Image 1 (cartoon, rainbow, N blue to C red):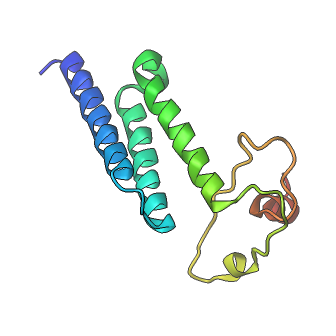
Image 2: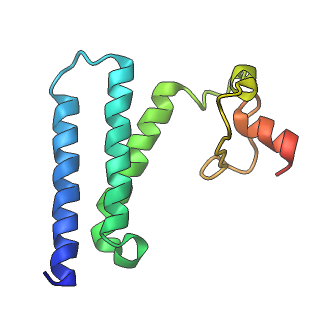
Length: 129
């Protein structure tokens, strides 16, 4: 198969996977919060993989729908978890848990200043910006 054929197959597979996952999510109104978050995480993950497989930033027209789905679903997950509600949080259980070996804390799309009480604020205070 040609490179173009492989790209088209990747695009079609990734699109079909997102369609199926969205259909599963919308098939029932009685998902628990955790089930819904899990399905949204699968959709988000699939969109990110689709973005990479169709060429990412080098093939913007083909990759844009996947990037849009990833951003939308990730925002829905963040909103459902109420990460960014502006209220100080007690993160001491996460920080002191020996089973957690690291955190990925990114200020991207959150402005220049960390939200007080967030893990981002804790990391900025502890490790600097």
